Length: 215
Image (spheres, rainbow, N blue to C red):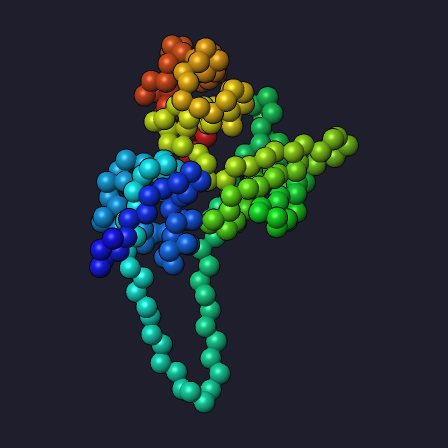
């Protein structure tokens, strides 16, 4: 700790938006701070941090407003919602215009996927749990459990497995084990996207995986 700020050690589920909310800052204040430049260069994405990463948090600067004491004044707090973007696909085609119920930390809202199968909603930066209930007409409800803020960086095995699982290529545990199932999932992904089929997560595969997952 210093007079200029503190160091926050990232825990599982943290992202820049959730840390900023807890510390009284806007996300860009933390992410663009010069003391966090190395972290920015390493992780690239403020939503994808790894447990043990260190984020510098500057002191909050108080803003003063002068107003007459004999009048009423309204002050509006600026909200900084995070964005949930989920694309639903089946056999390579978007699941368009399907009603859904989204529940985030107990708060629910109704919606409908757009023409490209996307669910795009504003959510609290510190949201941790969610459930997406897809309700196609004339068919049983489908339930997807969302672990918000728990996506590890693309350079980690956990992060690679999680992205492959989200894309429907992997069904195993999200851990550090480079298993045969993991290698098979990589080969399946490589074959699908016309990459060299090696079964290893090389740079070209990581780049394509990140692009397809959009994070």
